[in-house]
Length: 207
Image 1: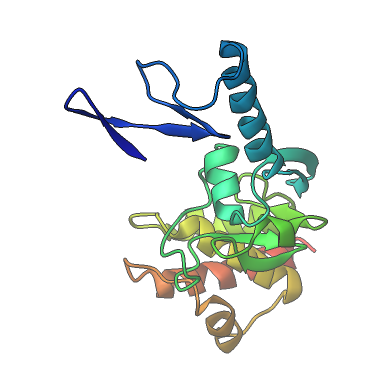
Image 2: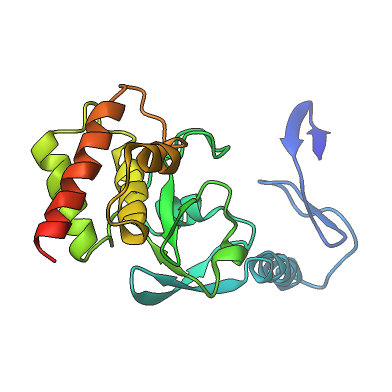
């Protein structure tokens, strides 16, 4: 709400029935003393905080508590609330899958996955990816030198690890189907396919 006082424009903050203009005395019904306005501010802050219910998540093998709205996409919970920037933002519409994480072991795009839908499930990000399959994929990416700019590669690695966990000896068609949603602006698709085959062979040899 905007007011004009002495020819100057001010933005007014409305709290309850009291109008407060920064730098001026509060306007509205008398409240007894300044503590009344403070109490109304505290009440509003309490309501806003209550709307952001605390949520428990299983993330990379640990249980954590997050202070975020239930409809916040997991991508932004990771990046903004937890400072975990390995999961990338590409499009926000699940069209590029740079944001791929694992939800109960399944490759899932996190940009459209609300926090409420992830509660009660195990989330794994690139920072927490570990184990035999993960190590084979990461070694293959290094040996084949897959990345070019690298921006999409965390999503590519997450998708490849999920594939090899479910299918130890994927064909070219299997790889293409599993990876088709993960876009690479640098066009490293042939190296990605080669690296997945390389990882599969390493896993077979060490079985």
